[in-house]
Length: 244
Image (tube, rainbow, N blue to C red):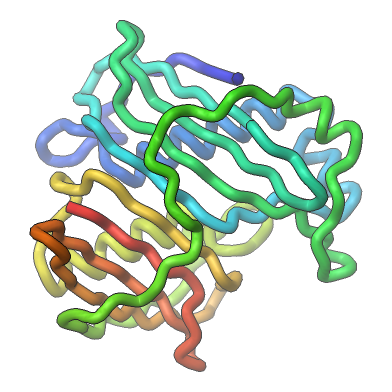
């Protein structure tokens, strides 16, 4: 397990002074990056070998989003490393021990020079001591497009601020895009989201255009918004599902 403590900043909250979902994901990403940079398999180590961790999926359960200036503890728990795959949990707690959010994430170590997955090295195994996974309602990483009312969102041009250090769209940016697409056609749902899943299928690069399709469905009183961010060939680059 790896943890760090923080305090919710003004730049991370919405108009009601509550942490945004996007900022929650940023905290999780920062936590895994901090663990990576503590070595021995740092980002520099990975770059020298033309390899990097690519996110396949998120599943995040939100119990409560913290308010401005609340003190929080963010943690990550790698619990499986096998072949080219790594799986890790994340959590955010108050420093008093209240569980605010938990997440599961699936990653692939990818060799960009060869264009194929790469097996984990001993340095990577040493960097991420394994522990027991957290309790949560684990779901499959693949998201099926449901039936329901469908809307076309405004097209999104990938800009420089969407990119990460691998020059691909950062995984958190896809979720921002999906939330904004819902808001543009159905109004804001951010404050009501209790869980989300993201299924990453392709990489989007600078200058690419994404075409959001929003599907609103209701199953036994549970409302779900599914956003498929498609490329020009009508292929899903990323599918994001929000339960409210």
